[in-house]
Image (cartoon, rainbow over all chains, first blue to last red; front, top):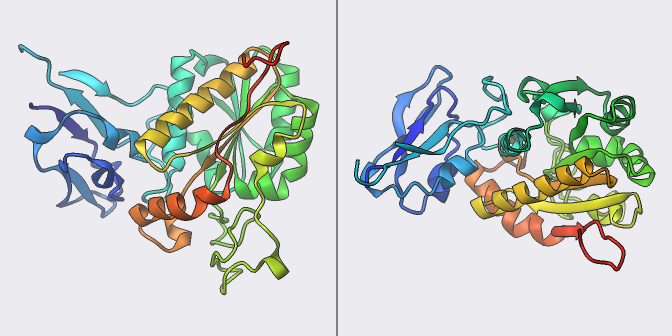
Length: 73
Length: 252
């Protein structure tokens, strides 16, 4: 699998709710701060992501978009 | 790659001003998604409250009115009666809807106004600095109840959706919680039903959403979700508390 959680780091406020609900532990707080000073979320293991979109469902700041890899492409 | 989840057109591109982890953003998104899915963006008038969500008029992609404190349902009543072809909703917090605006909320329900109220209950006054709200739990520490809310002197928490089920004009009353992905999906379902009740012209629809306030509760966002699940949810009636019925008593 090679699904993608696209992170709009300027909207991320580092609240950690996405990390809390992720069943596969794919996300982590990164080491790069955005212009507001929040250390934003990033994907640590793209191969584990099942594109369940729980992270995007709970993200209060619309910072996440989820894409699923299409089979046979 | 196939998009599974992308940003809704029902919201503007402006970033939210809410504190990190505040669930107002989730509720905004659910409303934005429904406005888009139900094709309502162009025919909606939203009414913003006073409180943290007072600036929500910047975020919804529909027309918005800012109401005086607690009077959102009264303003919405005027908007709906002047333009019955429009979809009208109010977005209120517990300080706005259950405290200063209690009379307006119950009166609008009693009149059976064909509007939808979205009531965000986080058991505290957020914007003004974490004072005790009518919905604060017994024993809850806030800046005006530093030793915990004491029922003897400060009374009991108010469960507004439960009260509204007794009012004949309120035809749809639901209470949901955005504490988990599953809860968020249920909240969206309840909101969709409430919107449909208004579109069908059945009467007043009211959705209470249990929400968090990590900043004023003094916990981090993840602990706030747990506090909501373990402390708040047992104290408030949850689920679809009242659904519209047709003759014979069947649910519509």
